[in-house]
Length: 359
Ligand SMILES: Cc1cc2nc3c(=O)[nH]c(=O)nc-3n(C[C@H](O)[C@H](O)[C@H](O)COP(=O)(O)O)c2cc1C
Image 1 (cartoon, rainbow, N blue to C red):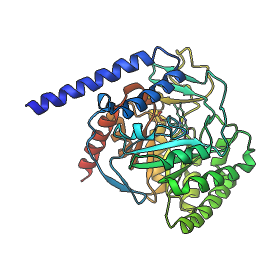
Image 2: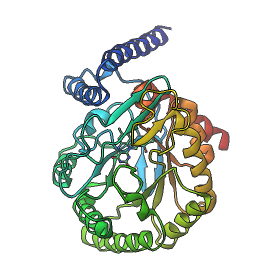
Image 3: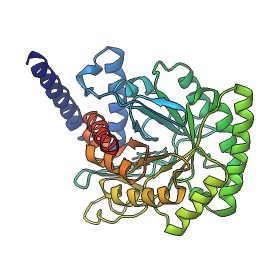
Image 4: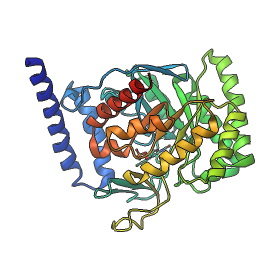
């Protein structure tokens, strides 16, 4: 009895604390509130006060890509681009954290404003443009992390590198992060780097995958460690394009695929003042499109490699739905911004229900 009162009391307090913080932060412009939110989290963690925000996440261990995950719910790329906040984010109960997108050289990204919160639609539009401190900074952060869970690194190309030379940037990032990453993601699906998405198709994709797989083998021998290589794809793909990508990743024996990144579609945001902003849309309006891509991809891959499902997980049940659609792991971004740490707990609970039903 005392335990359940204490438990529900602490759940109530952490939810209250989150809603208070979120309400204050949402009064500020989106990018400033993102930055302050992350810095606030880190401070709470440093002073041992993260318990004020954390929800009790149940353990749901699983092995994927030869890695041990404490639960299947991870943080998607883009929130902690430079790996500056791994320890604080990890302490919130995520089963894994993906940092990046990182590029070889630091770059400022697009001019501000470049991040727009569509609260009514529970969506975000961003055209950040891979703003980041460069791969060397990220490597230093990875070296000094305390978080013991799985950390993936999402890699990209600099804006100043021509699309034809993109392989050089991906190679350099892969080489530098390899000894310190648990998995590496080749991001070809950001809509905010001109020409990047064209690398998802045909010869360009196959050449890039061949180069990176060959390098993965060299690095595995050198470091005596197999680091899985994944591809992250867009939601704006035709059925034929999804099939063709699946064939290519199978041909080059990638270790997994992440579906999906943000969408260029503006369906459902017509009424928002921000509907006209350029960039990628994420959140509630992406759920259906991302899951549709996931289902088609899972069909085409025929269980040959695991898929991480991401896009529009806004409530716990959406995570279970991704598993049902063919994902083995899931990731949160926009849902986490709107619903906070309780979403991690609810998403893990929903995954557990699906796993139990499949037993
Ligand atoms: C502000 C913002 C920045 C993002 N930056 C990246 C990025 O650098 N690399 C990447 O692969 N995805 C990035 N994403 C995409 C997310 O990782 C995720 O794939 C997408 O938002 C869909 O998930 P969601 O609907 O849960 O947000 C970003 C998303 C947002 C909202």
